[in-house]
Length: 153
Image 1 (cartoon, rainbow, N blue to C red):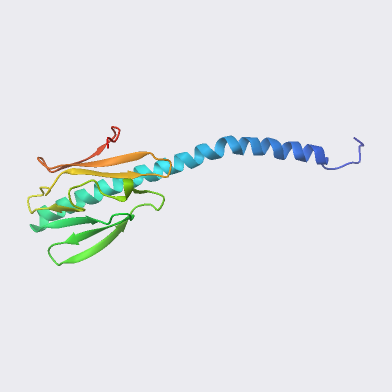
Image 2: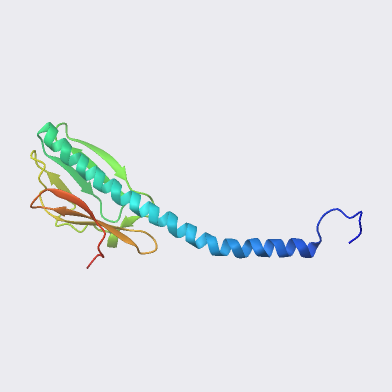
């Protein structure tokens, strides 16, 4: 290289771009997977939190409160028994209900004025990679919990 040359040769630039490309090909899939997993966790905890909110609202207002899930959708609704209004809620867009349905006897979770649940079951959500999380509704105790055990069909 001559002393008065400033800059890089084409070969040096190609090698640098090649090295950056290899690094991105390793990091990008891990980043995308972590993002999808975070969206799944956030959505699952959002559903559990919303169910608990409606349960507490039923106890506080002493009226029936409901959460209505729409099959094959990422939308569900709060129903307020005191004024008959519906409030829409959505989960993150790449997340969907497992097999497009809510795994409950009915797609409506109803809380009586004591905060008890009308029927138990699971609400399972899934990310595009196939990972799942399920919120379990325990009829006997009115508990709403996040389950980390594998989902059994």
